[in-house]
View 1 (cartoon, rainbow, N blue to C red):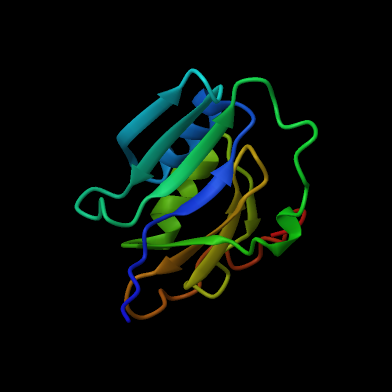
View 2: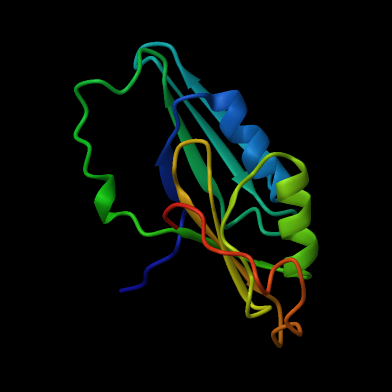
Length: 142
């Protein structure tokens, strides 16, 4: 028996705002499905060259009231980046809060507009600790 990774699904409240957040991370829309009968849209976004590893953004046209709110079982999405300091600066410059700054030069956490925790990990060895990250405190939950 074999198993193959397909995608990670997250529910979103504002499709355009969520797509803009994942685009800031460098993800691109790879496919979309609008289901008129089910009244939902699925948008798959993935890093360029890794289209087989998407995040599926599920947008319910009529909202999510009445759906189970068991999101506590979801941990986080994780992406490796070439320069964690550059990525965190880019996100901050675009209004994203860095919940867990990369004080160690290796790991940071941010939250999407839908409160999905996203882990950013430095490719290769950790970078040397540097300001403003080294002395930046955590903000909120991550």
